Image 1: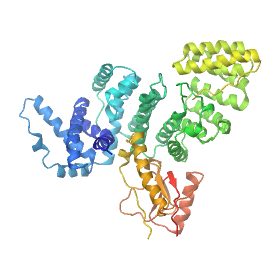
Image 2: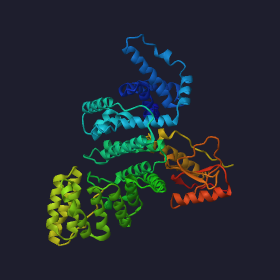
Image 3: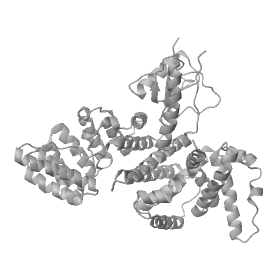
Length: 427
Length: 123
């Protein structure tokens, strides 16, 4: 392992804690971030020589704090102190800071830092960009690449988001129990957004976007370490892991979507699946189901099936039914219809989605699924119309290509007389 | 004499490793593991899932208390471990409870195993 490798993973690991503590100190996001950056630069110089500090976060907080005080002094046109003098007996100071670090304080510091990124005034894309900028180990360049925008545009987006957050004045007092649980829920939703941003690949840039999924998983583990008894956080982490575990099988060599039914399950990431299953197992024991847990339980049923035909669709249908009650949405009903098609056949599935036509008319998956059900019922002409709509609405070339394949098969079967089987929409 | 080598590291750091980095570390360890295995020196090896997947059974009270999260006390020391093959967490907790009845006091941390090599060294 090179110096750069271990230092970079230590810096990434310490970042949320360090920036959160610096934010508490300076109550200014920009200053906290600059202080952290400065501390990182000094770490890159000092650590290869002196070896890693006992507590990397404490070291970075200490050095960052001094650097920022320096900046503030300079801005106030005061005589700056030489940094050597400021950090001369760092070893002692580091111990002192490390001793002062109370996990409970840290918990609320980091939660606040994450919560700041979820300000309701921020559009989702700004929330995600800000969260990644502030707590992830990704550079602006990497974030920009994942969003398919230029580095300058991403810088601008982050600056705008910071401006709005600064104006919002999020209080620094330790939150009460109700406020804390509201913050946790908002942060969980933000982490899920980060994940989805990575999961919904708009291009073949799978590598850059997978980084977003991995960051989201890291954030969910961080949140879970802070709040180890929250079943919904276990559910969130499990959901992200179980979904991301399928990533290596989601696209074929040409970049086309491979549907869940057709995926090579031996490519699935076994260790992530094991961790996701362990977490959902833990969450279920609490007997307090929530939307993330139910979705994770559905993902777990897919993960447990060694072959597509072993999938417990009956249980998945029931779980989607629970999800419909917990979090009613036409998209959830659409997903349940896919399970119903497997358990009770396409006619029942079609009956479920017919009433959704108004709400989901602009939704790619709706027309894809409707087309597939119609096709299974032998109503090829109607199916063709639905597939055409789906192609027009496709979000990615991969989605359009998948529907086109269905249409091609339809054309073939029109000659041969047989109907191709419809596959589940999720990949 | 058999020795257990217990692996400690900061989870925040290891979970910040990229997949490539993780794979590289595992490949290097794998080479050593294979050599030890050829020499007949290697017993079971396990890589545990993160502590966020852990559950702790406090068996210093009756009934024992099941809590989420890893064993966090520092006044007690690691004395040994079992590896059990169970259908899920409920069964693992039941096994731990049974062991706890035979030996009350202290705690068991129940941590799922991510990677397991049985090893061949036996006596």
